[in-house]
Amino acid sequence: MILLVDMDAFFASVEQAHHPHLVGKPVIVCGDPSRRGVVTAASYEARPFGVRAGMPLGEARKLCPQAEYVEGNPEKYVALSLRLLDLYLTFSPDVEPFSVDEAFVGLDRRLSLADASEIAASIQREVDARFRLGASIGVGPNKLVAKMASGVNKPRGLTALSEEDFRRVFWSRDVQEMWGVGPRLAERMRSLGIETVGGLAHAPETELRAAFGVVGAQLREAAWGRDDTPLVPYHRGVDPKSMGHEVTLERDSGSAGFLDGTLLRLSDQVARRLRTEGFCGRTVTLKLRNSRFETRLRQRALANHTEDHLRIYEVAKSLLAEMWTGDRVRLIGVSVSSLERSASGAQAELFEDHRRDHALTRALDGLRDKLGEGSVVPAGSLICRHDLGHVPFGAVSPRRDPESGTRADGSGAPPARPTPATRRSAARHNVRGAFGNAPRVPRSDPS
Amino acid sequence: MFESLNDPVDVLTSFVDGRMEPLRFRWNGRVVRIARITGRWSRREGQNVIQCFAVEGASEESFELCYDARRPSWTLSRAWRTAGRESSS
Image (cartoon, rainbow over all chains, first blue to last red; front, side, top):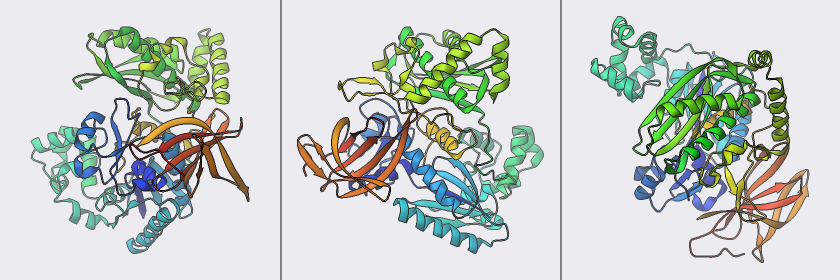
């Protein structure tokens, strides 16, 4: 049996637990509320007003002006997430973090649904008692059923489904409720006459393969409640597929210099993260969103793998030159994919006679490990730093200096060289995703 | 509303059974008594670990305090105050 523990409105609930006067009030967690950005999480009290994660803050303020707008604190949520994982480990050694607010817990296969549900109820009670937080838990024979069951009854719900129960509950529901079916895929399915989960389950496999490739056949199996995806406990770890950072600018910008400085800063963060986690990457992707909310992506592969911020920056800059038509930019992001463990990339750089650069980078990383992310940043990334919006984790997040009262580059830093396979690493990746950087998880709305 | 501060503050602190707990602090010329610790977590700055506490003061008062063992010093990082009203102890 597998459980999926999903913390209810996690970020907002943590703020309510830490600040009890917020209990029962609409709470909206975001970046710096005095700046522009998007809603990171909305409490259940804010949701009836139509506020949702990902919504621009300005829109949220129109819908729910009376809400408390709280600047999110990623370090706090990661710390809580790790303590929650520790709690789950007291129930089972097989715990797989799925996002900062979700985790799969593997139980003995021989347990009945009823027995597994009792364990789930115990977890709910412990989460409430220790953290004053609510969790919704799905119980099922596999990850798919557990995941979808967790969303049946929220908040603080507990839903246990067998494969047969799954079909009874979900077959009549819209096909978009299937895990893995997003709006576009659902639209394409509807165009083929597949309206419900049951319709997907009974669609001819050949037709699904023809339309959607191997994914079509997999989704058909999933619609029957079947899933053989293994649970991977965090101590075994899974390598990430990409790493990236993006930022919503304080004001839409048409300044080439500002965009260039921002690109350098983002490239530096991505490269730093790659090195910290022991990876190098080969494909650089630039993301641009203009003031009309039109989002464009373009990517380019390098000749070999890199973990060097200047190489990433150079590619990102050339992509910007190709993509940017001079219109005002709202959001800009850089990510690197086609990742490998860094040994091969480092070797390649050594052969290219980049030894001095490599040694310098290591020395600078050593400084950052010791003193924090804000201790050393590329000079070119300081262009217009006061106008740069909120980006968590380090050098790009300006904060008030207690001595002078002015804003200076802060240093909310990642841990010194965490092992990639640790739960800390997993949780950090995921919370980065939730705060507007490249996500590793399918959704960014903790609920 | 919440206010981000990062103000250095003097904090009367207890150390009992290996646990550190802030008891009261001086801020803006007043002493705020801590009624309850509602949360604790830590964050890193390089090798340095900063201990953070969410605390409740008197009614409708809420704060976040951080202890930097390297300096050592306390910082009031965030305060929640009702609009149009100064917090009091």
